[in-house]
Structures are given as C-alpha cells and as structure tokens.
Length: 518
Image (cartoon, rainbow, N blue to C red; front, side):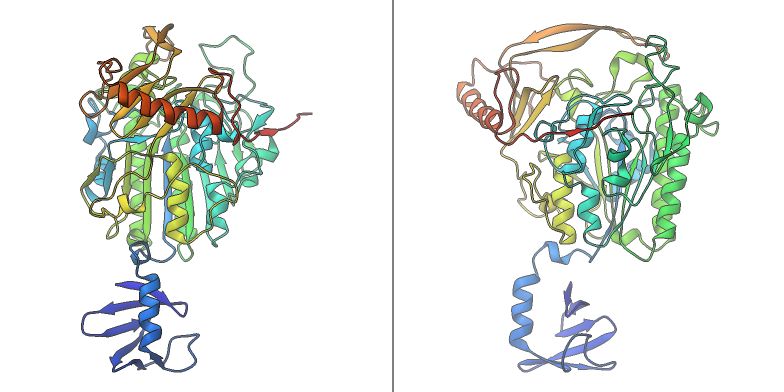
C-alpha cells in the first residue's frame, strides 16, 4: 500500500510496518517509532503519534492515492484510424502486435468516443476536456487559418506543466498554424510536426492546383523544412517515434507528458521503406504496421529507462476512418458510416490504456467514456488543478482501476458536427439521432483518389446500442419514454453549448482565437 507523508513515499505492509523511503517504522502502542536512518524529512522527530497517522490514512488512502506519485503519461493519437483497425478488434490483412500487447497488458475500451468526427474539433476536445462546441472549434482548420484554439483555454499540457511535468509533442497539431497558436504557445516545451493535415499541400490530387501552400515541418515555432516532399512524408511516422524515444530518454528522471500524434493513416498514405509492401492488405496495412511499430518503440524505451511501471500509455484515434478513400481507408468495424458523421462509425474509436500494476491487465471496459475525459482524469491522477473555466469531461479513474461496480460518470455525451450542429446524443445504451442532413458515400475511391459523397437526411431516431451497435433498427416509435428523456438532455446541451439547427445560442459558449496574418 503506497501513499505520501511528509513529502516522502510511504509503504504500509501487514504487521504494522511503515517504510518511509528507506527508513522504517513500527507501530508501538499509540505511535509510530522510526529507526535505522531516522525520521522522514520534514518531521520534527522520529515518533509520529498514531492519531496523526490514522488521520492521514483516513484522508489519503482513497483509491486514487494508491496510484504511483507523479506518473509519466504518453498520449498517442492517430489520424483517421478506425475502430476495426487493430488486431484485437478485427483488423484484416495486417497485424498490430504492440497494440494487441497494450490490450493484453491493460484495458480496452469498447464504447470510447471522440467529441466530433473531424480533425481540429476532435483535437480541441482532447486537449481542453471540453466539447468543441464550447471552445468554438468546428471542422478542420486550413493553412493560414484566422482562428484556432484560444490561448485563454487551459490545455492538457498546461495542466501537467503546472504540476512540474516536462511536456513534448511530436506529430500533427491542427489547432491553428499561426505562430501565436502553435504547441509551444499552448503548454508544450518542445514540438516537432505538421501544423495541420498532411493532405493540405500542393501535391493533393483531389484539390485544385494552387489550393494549398507548401506544407512545413515545424520544430517548435520554426519551419525546419518549409516544403515537405513525398519522400519526407514517408519518414514522418518513424521520425515522430524517434523523437518520442529521445524525449523519454532525456527526461527519464522527471515526470513527463508526451503527446504523439502521427500524421497517418490520414491520406495521402506514406510509409517508410522498412514497412513498404509488408502487409497483405496493401499500403493502408503497411501504414498501420509502422504505427504499431512506433508504439512498440515507445513501450521499449519506457522499459529500457526503468519507467514502464510508472507510465500510463493511452492510445486512441481522432475520429473514424475516411471510408470514401476505399483501399486507402480503414474499417469502422461493425458501426455505421465513418468520419464526418455522428453515426457510430464516425465517433466511436479504438482506445487502449496500459499502466502495469495499476490498470488491471487484459480487461475490457464497456462503459461510455471519451477523449474529453482524459484531461480531468489526468488532473485527478496527478493532483493537478482543473482549468478555471468550465469543462465537460469527467474523471474516469474508477473505470481505469477496474473498481467493482464502476460506471460511466456521464449522464450523456453529445456530438456536434457541421456548422455547430447538435446531431446526436448517447445516454446509457441509448443513442438519439437528431434531425439533420449528413454526408454519405455514393462511390468509394481507391489508391489515394477520393470517391463521391452523397447527402442523406435523418429524422428523430433512437437506437439501442447494446443490441444494435450498427444502428439499423430505429426504436423511436416504440420507446417514447427514452426519446423524451434523451430529447430533454439534448435541450440542456443546446442551452449550454448552442445549436445552429435550432438557432440556439448557448450560455456556455466561448470564442476561439482570432489572429491576423501579415
């Protein structure tokens, strides 16, 4: 049993033995007497009255305090990787041994959600613990964007940094490419990566010539490579992994928060020579296998540095697969539709969490949780203060610890897409689809070329996701009580976060950044 007392790490063993770092104490009547090296630092003498010890235990021996002090955190956030794109969730034509190992040694979440089915909005939610509708980030920001994540928002990096963590990010940012909005201005000590999606470049075969400027690779706030080439794109996954390993090695004596956001498997797909042609599926499979290798490199580095047992590693994706790209897209598994919709295929993503000795190995969590929960969970875990402004995420620590009877802390999760449209809501087993128009796929593309989108319209629909995860049977007509309950929750969300479909302005909406370019 571990806890902290007088700024020392303490272990209590059966038989009344307390170990303060390398000092030992035994319960003698109504006191703890220390012997050997003497009293723990900060204590006036080497005898601590039992009433103080018991009071301390009463106040601190909660479940969360049993977790290791100041754990490192590695957050891996892939781009457009579908629910079905890891081995343990049905991947076909390629293997993911390191992700499968994370599942075997940690916890796999089956009902884990992003807050929006598109890049920038999803990333804003991850880093702020807020619905993107709250912080004003919709869709995917382009180059020279005049908006982005407002520096007045408190990011996950800033939360961790306030607790003395070293923070690093390697990969895709996509929350504003203006110099004032880059990661090093939002809580990260160092950064290497692309400021937005890798298809926002002059070589995009699906865009008009001249649509995009050169794509830069950024090092902190400077363009390390102002014009990324196809050959450069093929090195990105490996390059990010190498920087992540270096970061772990350089900061192995202090707590760190490491955010790795691979640019892949977002199209255009590129892979290094060491993985090219290695999977039966083709290029997409090759790309996923290289990402899996990168995860393995990070896990190996943690073990090599003696940090494996004190590091929480989280793996998930920013939204569902971009299915219109056919063989260059992943799989949503059993779910309906894909990226760019609020059907399950667009918002339910793979999620694995591993922390040896803290998260029960080989467990599956079927409770509803999401990326908005990462910030408050890490804050609770590290003792960090939550942002002063309102957030939407909840602490899911009891789920991670596998506590008996632990339930989702959410009464509901809401999902926005388009121009601030509230399109769906989940509460328990129920999913309410609100009337809206959504994009669907009329024809899939192939080999990097897009297909053709269509438009479809839905009314007020209700699905039981426990029995119908594919959202095939609308139960709105036969379950009016559930429709009424979820509709009331949707109205609460509108009043707080707004909704353009009903022309509602939310009282809790905040403004994004507004920047000017020379």
